[in-house]
Picture 1 (cartoon, rainbow, N blue to C red):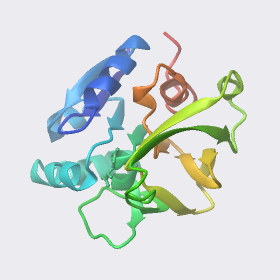
Picture 2: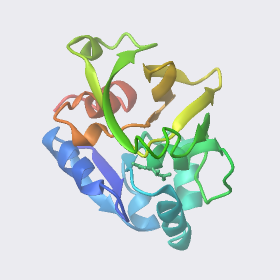
Picture 3: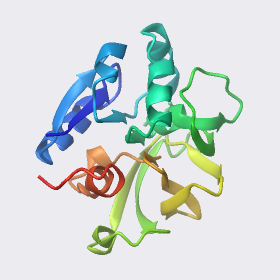
Picture 4: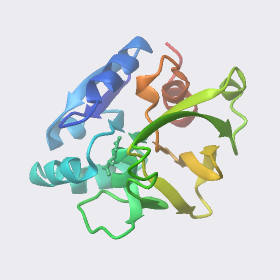
Length: 199
Ligand code: GLN
């Protein structure tokens, strides 16, 4: 059985652990480099990217995670997690992992609409699961992805902006797929991206 590690300092990590277990994975919280070194895939949850980044730094995990992702470790990053993987965060030099060739703007939907739900549309993906029904995105103080480089595929989008992108084994969402009953983003990650066998 494959083990997925969920970075569990802050934010809604418990929902990712529950979702992964419901899909048949062995899911464990990850709070130190030793645990991060052992997992077959990693999830970086939403929350506050500055806080999670500082804690990753304090517990000496940034270099190890960056190296493992560089070596092909599958990673699902949501919202704050996506910010932590972005190569460029507009106007911020906060600690980050980087490696995903996108540029993001934090809290970019503005103060009036701190959070909202909206149907997102399928972009560059022929994965059959997306055709079953609309995907509802829950956006909470979400970032906007302003640009992506050529090797980044835009899987789902909203209002002309990417909201789920893939670069090799990295999958990053600006919304929170763990907060709806729809399991497709996690299934896509485990099976289409990470290549884990169906349980
Ligand atoms: N606004 C948060 C940040 O900048 C992200 C919000 C979230 O993860 N829901 O880190």
